[in-house]
Image (cartoon, rainbow, N blue to C red):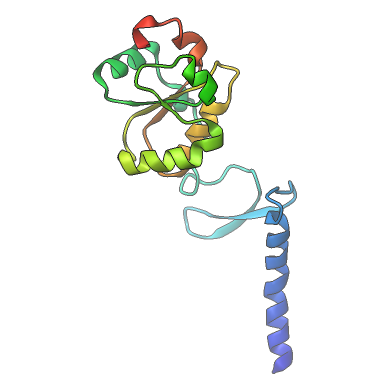
Length: 169
């Protein structure tokens, strides 16, 4: 009887130790596996970093960038969107869109938590960073999405384009 318990225990310890090894230092090995629940509720193993079912994690799509300068102008004018500047506090101090909230990537957890207390998760949010070469806006977008916000857009051209629009400052 004790032998049966040891076998059952060993069967559980090995996969758990593999899981802990993959997560221990915060880096994931490309050979690690992640379990994903499919639409029929069965579990399948996928390499970590592979696309996960929509139920588990929304996929990145072009709709995140589906925002025009005219829509930004309208939303700033009528105050119907939260505008997030994902640049550094120093860059934000040198200029930003009128009414924007500074959410630098290094502070995204605390700033998004505050937004979650102040606004409903379906609030329309427009995020921008420095330019199309900057990825801070995408980082803030991904984090806000993971925290339940559902109505987000990234203005990919960023401050480089917005700074020329004097009516937005």
